[in-house]
Structure formats: C-alpha cells, structure tokens
Image 1 (cartoon, rainbow, N blue to C red):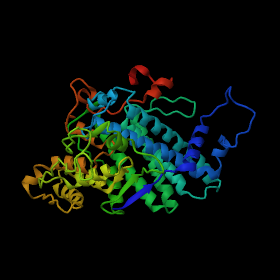
Image 2: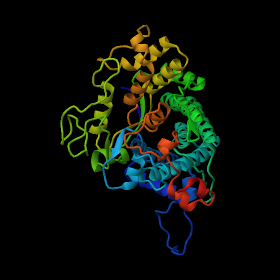
Image 3: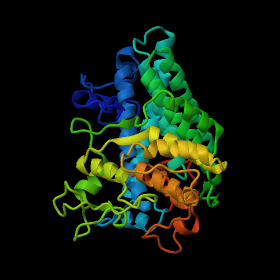
Image 4: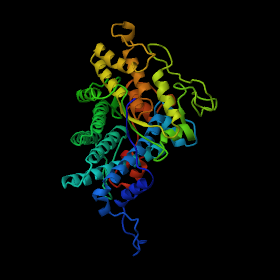
Amino acid sequence: MQDMRFSRYSGWARKGVSLLAAAAFAACGILDTEVENPNVVVQEDVEKPAAASALVGGALLFVTEGMGQLAAAHATVSDEATWRGSFDVIGAFDRGELQHNDNLYSTAGYTELTQGRWLADESVRILTEHDANGDLSDRSLLATAYWLAGLAKTTGAEVFEAFAKSDRRDAGGVVDRNSLFDEGIGDLGQAVSVAQSASADGLATAAMAYQARAYWARALHQVCSSAGCSNPPLINDSQANNMAATVLAAVGEDWQHVLQFSATTEDSRIGFEINSRREIVIENHIIQQSSDLRQSCWPGGDACSTDGIQLMDPIDDIQDPALQREAWTFLGSFIYPDFVGVSARELRLILAEAALAGGDMNTFATHINAVRGLEASLTAFDAGNPAHTAIAEDLLIHMRQVNLFLQLNRRLMDMYRFDIAGPEWLPGNLAVTAPGTVLPLGDLECDSNPEVDLVQFCN
C-alpha cells in the first residue's frame, strides 16, 4: 500500500508552533512588565524566512487535530458509530439532533479547523512574500501551505452548515458554502502548480487528488444539502472525473494520502473515543459489540476476540474483507489511527458512480472491479449478468461504506442521498426532517463573533 504521510511537528517544535500561532493574536495588557522574556515570539519573528517550516507545521497541526475531532462527530451522526458514554450532547447527535452548537466533537473540530484555516492562509501570505524576494529555500513549504488552506476551506464547506472567516481580531461573517468550496479548490490548484514547479511530484499528486474530491463534494452539495436532498443524486461531475482519472494514472490502485497521528504528535479524537474512552462504539450492524456494548468484537480485542464483521458483500455473501481490513487497522491503532484524506479507492468509486449515473455498466464494472480486485476473495462485477446489474446501485453504496469507513462526511451524505436512516435517529430531528443537514457552527463562534446572526446559526 502506498502512503503519503505528513507528520506533524512534535516536542519543542510543536510548542514553538503554538507560540507562533498565539503570537498573531497576542496583545499588550495590564500584566505586561519591562522584563524581557526570551521565549516571547513576536510578529517580526513569525515573518522571518527561518520560521517558514514552523508556520506550515502549525497549520498542519490544527487542521489534523480538527479532522480527528470532526471524524468523531460525523461517525456519531451517521450509522457508523453510536453513543455509549456519559455526554448526552454526543447522544443528541446520535439521535439526529444536529442543531446543537455545543457538541463536544464538532465545536472542538470547528475551532481547530478555523485556526488551521487562518494559519494556512497566513503561511501562504508570508511564504509568498519570501518566495518573491528569493528568500524561500524550500518552495514545497508554500505548496503545502496552499494545500492546507484548500483542505481546511473545502472541509469547512462540506462539513459545516455555516463557516466564518475572521482575520486576527477582525471578525468575519459566515461565508457562502459554494464560495468557500471555490476558494478552497483554487488553493488546491495553487498547491498543484507550486508543487510541480518545485519538483515535489508526490505533493502535487496528493493536492490534485484532494482537488478532484473537492469538485465532487461541491457537486454533491449543490444537489443535497439542508435546503433539500433528492434521492438518489448520483454525482457525475466532469471536473472531478477528469482530475480523478489523471491522479489514478499516476498512482497505484491502493494509494492513499493520510494525516498521521502518533505518540510524538497528537492522538486522534475518534480513535480515543472509540478505542480508549469508549464514549462511542462502532454500530452493532457493522461489527458485533461485546456483551457490555462498549467494544467491538475482533481478534485483537480483550472483551471478545471473535471475528465480529457483520456486513456481507452483496455479490459473494461473505464477510466483507475491505471492512475487515479497514476496521481492524483502526481498532488496532488504539488512539493513533491514521486519518485517510483521499485515496485511489475513493477516486475509483467517484468514476464508478459517474458511469452508473450515465447508465454505462461496462465503465462502472471497470472502476468498481478495480476496487474489488484489491481483495482476493471477491468476485468481479459482471456487466453482462442481470443479477449483478440489478444491484449495481446497492453495490456502489456498499463499496463506499466499507472502503471509506470512518472517513469524514462520506457515509452521512450517502445516507441522506440514498434514503438510509440512522438506527438511533428520532422523528422530528434534523437528520430526519432536513436530510442533507451537516454539523452546526461552533459555539465559540456564536459566543464571540459579532458578525454571526445568532438567530439563524446558533441554538
């Protein structure tokens, strides 16, 4: 399996990054003294060429932490995980109550993501100046800053009902989601261009893969949101398709791009909540739960060591091997599971869906079988077999569920557009009454941003 990993800075460097980020918001106060503190980082230090790596590392830290938080929120709303702990606000999401701005996972994820967005944009601004002056020794840092800015913006547009953009102490209002998608896609395009010019081919390919997925997510948002969601809106977006095909021509069939958690950086919130604290647990219809309902049954577990895989492949009627691999990797990683941002599997599934939308079963077969072929035990989809073509849409749904397991906002939007109800969703809650609704604006934004309409965005 081909991975492209961006590890976050640890130890001294990570603390330095936090100081750099904090410095941008710092101000004089009544506790200031005349004593010089050698540990103080001022704006002039942040803007020195030597700080370029730390700036980008800070943006990476915030964006990655936000992704882990938001993955926990998404899994709880969807049918991937269910609430078993003591925080009722987590249970509210599980029941489909998506109006709560103070949800532990989503508000923390929102805060981290908005900080990462700001610091990524700040990094782009500063590093662009260094580059123009000939002072940037590693141009791949500028490409990485663009990638992080694009990832933060497209994620914000996809995952939140409302997303505000402020600049230091200058409050910014809620941004139109389509505009935020466009801005993020533009940043990802810049990441591709700068990475190519810097001969950072791996980074250029990764940024292009994120851009392909962002085009697809924007197209989905335009037909399925809280304003309305038709069933089933199969997505066939030419920009997403063309870019996905370009990336697939350059990578292996099991390529993926991950954000990495580790003991020397940070733990993943979704890993911590499922594998350690057990506030949430993978749903029983996906993996059998232990007798106390707090753990998943799998060979590496300590509560029940049986193979608990419950989902069966639609063609072969066997325990799905892709789910087994994805779930066991996640469960075995404890609090440090990698976060998959985009993968060749997902790009293939985007192209398979486009073919299905156009009624092209042969092309559908080509792409769906490229993914099925990664598992030795699965039979290929046969476009000439009526029994297979009759379940083509169900197969697409299943293949997305098991191959994109616990990946941010994949399953929830599939549930909406294919009319799949969450096991714990209750009548009258937003997930039921307004399918397409995603996560609410973070509560800190509601509390502190005077540009936010409290009646419209805050509960």
